Image (cartoon, rainbow, N blue to C red):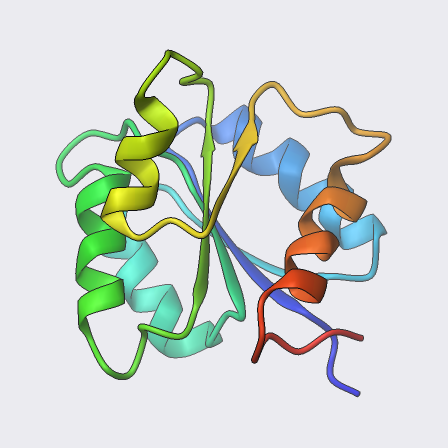
Length: 130
């Protein structure tokens, strides 16, 4: 069976590299994007099963990009997980309203991060799991 494919979208290079390294060590295929424009290109080229979406980015934020992905027939089935330090009351509801399928808080716990991401493959129908 095909390895899970995760696209990480984050404007912080350190967050991108840490998440990429941890997922790669967990045998997950990973691509990265530093902004919404790169993310759109990677969605087409990499065809991710799941996107870890930073919410606050310059230009188009992660919520707007999620809305656009969920509105397009060719990308609406991709699982989008908010990947952010935002944990204020009501923020999770805003993420769900935008189309996010879940939420992972930053900073990540390197010991459990890959398993947490893989759990989304088990709970969302249509997502392939290795």
